[in-house]
Amino acid sequence: MAFTAQDVKTLREMTGVGMMDCKKALTASDGNMDKAVEWLREKGLAAAQKKSGRIAAEGMAFADVVDGVGVVVEVNAETDFVAKNELFVDFTKTVASVVAKENPADVETLMSLKYPESELNIEQMQQDRVLVIGENIKVRRFARYDSGFSVPYVHMGGRIGVVVNFELSEGLQNNETVIELGRDIAMQIAAMNPAYRDKSDVPQATMDKEKEILTNQAKEDPKNANKPENIIEKMVTGRIGKFYEESCLLQQEFVKGDKISVEKHVAEVAKAVGGTIVVRGFTRFEKGEGIEKKQEDFAAEIASMVK
Image (cartoon, rainbow, N blue to C red; front, side, top):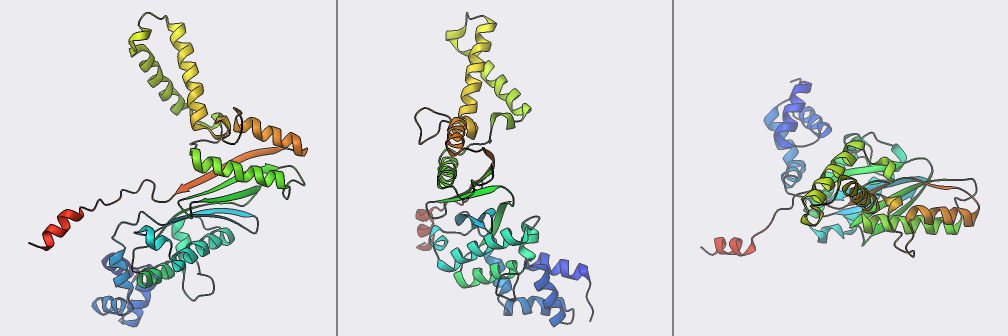
């Protein structure tokens, strides 16, 4: 019995299994939907999918440079214990290498790419790792820099992954002072979590809103009750400067310096090595950020078991 693209879509919605595996199941089952579900269960794919409903908010953020391409990925698991599993770590690092080499447009495209030294694609290998490890695993996101000079940093074994990207003048790519600068700035990004590269990158709408909030705060402070508008404006301008220092990498105080901004430190290093150094961008992933973790009430769980 033949099957259609709609049948493949229906089977995927029923089982949550990837399109290619659904197509294989329908082919092997001669288009019979029930037999296709059984086929997936026999292969262990449907069982893997049951785990996919569980919240994966732990895992690993990993950064690397592969053949000059900077890459950072986040792969999630359910527990911190599994995040240290050798199979999980190897899977994460391999996914990063595929991102670097293949330049996928998005996660969906990435999942369809071939897993190195295997007949499986990344989605199928992810399902295989779920079955072997016994937890839900999910490739969540990635970022890639294929030009300029990139420096990676991984904090606390994968809690945070950072790639910082520079534009350098000729001959500085192998300069140890420049490489050290890259590591220092990557660590600064991991520690201080700037939202923007430079104050010029902050959207105008964000600044307008920030100024509105700061103005209202200043006016509502009883200590400023009798202060004229021009003084309030100066206060707000000062607080805007503080916003830049907290939120923008180049305006932040360099954590390894003595009251000097990152921007000035980069300029000093560039002068010392006799070239130009420009911070072009960065990406910082912290594992599980923005994912709502399930709060387990173990006392209630135990109580329910002994009723």
